[in-house]
Image: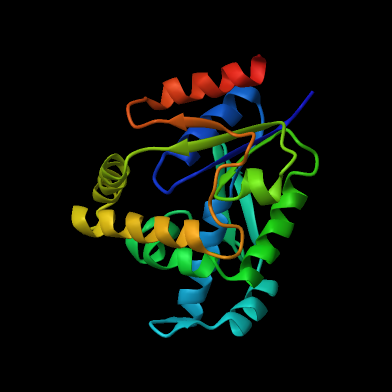
Length: 224
């Protein structure tokens, strides 16, 4: 019987990498909800609805309702990539500029309501691994397996810094660490669906775990 696996946790804990591997091992569909919020942030920046004075929510929502966010499977990579209005924006949404704004966009109630509805539709047939901030608490509170991933700030910042360096991003380690701390604060204190562990979620601290060790832990919970 197919189930829903909800993986929540802090930024740069490797949720997406682990979730992709778990989905592949089970033959499930992987859905990266963080990429969806990044896509909306990309749209907001592209349209000029983001500034130091805040997010222009009404025009952003109007543009979002006219846009199409979807995942398209890439057989060469073995997982799905995110598209906005037919354009693959997977690389564009992973930079520090998007990271600096995504939590601000994601905390908007209208944005969350819109995307949560999309996410529920994507998971209606089960057989999915979905990762994000509020999957086990808001999107799928009845998910059969809930995982909450965490790791130390320094380790998360180092992982993210290496990823950005590999992509040619010039962000400094201190900038990445500050970004992670800022996002943690916004994610955990926002009024709408704050990041928190579901009461029935299993905590995995992966500060000293490899991706394979994390994957095997989750698969063991699926099979137990």
